[in-house]
Length: 306
Image (cartoon, rainbow, N blue to C red; front, side):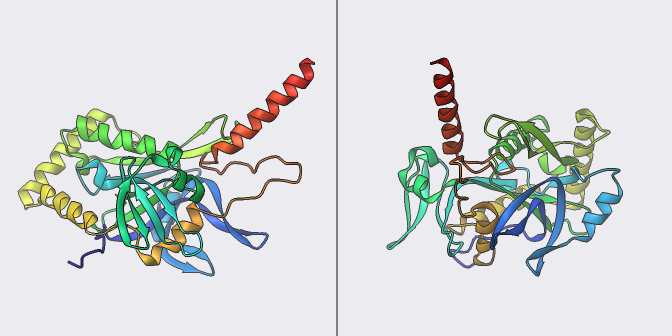
């Protein structure tokens, strides 16, 4: 195994809730209110659709807002890896990745392990645009039981919800997370930070038309069949754990530029009237924008009272 190279789950496709569009000469992320499954091939700057995208759409009467999935691992933290990440926006290369306690940072002396204070408490991170970034690998369909689709997100809502769900499902199933029939579900909400407009995040639940008790029964039956066939889930989790730990940064050099373009675009300048730019569709707009809005409202209310 090559040292320094993170060995990650094989990926056969992507799950997205948006796309990259060109505006005023810049390629910027544009959020959507439904899922899209793509291949890993781009043509003219657009990701080509995966055949499963059309199959899943035919099975629903409206927009694709639910995808039947299974997890690859029993350990929740192997399926979803979340960290605080800072990317060089010119090269797309990761500069600093941390978990709130320690971080790995690229310096003139190589990769160094330092203390991580999270983006709010780190001046280095605040200057460079450090924010949460997660990758979720799931299995869709039965063609390739080791080939996963990857969902990437920088949304607090998606990361927090998916983390909780994965740990809860692992707990109630007696560590049979990889055997549970689940589905990714797109949900909407409005917040003060989104200016009360709808934002969308990804959740995880048992499949539509099924109860948790039925899902648990199916998980135990699948686990029994796998053990009878010699399937060693514990060994698979252990191999994945070693693979992730083999490299300092998970995303390969080929993926880094696309990741930076989609989740770390250049900051949009303020409008001519001085108001901050609108938030992104996943609700991850800077806190400074909300702070400035509240300050302006306070000034206006103060003037009205006078």
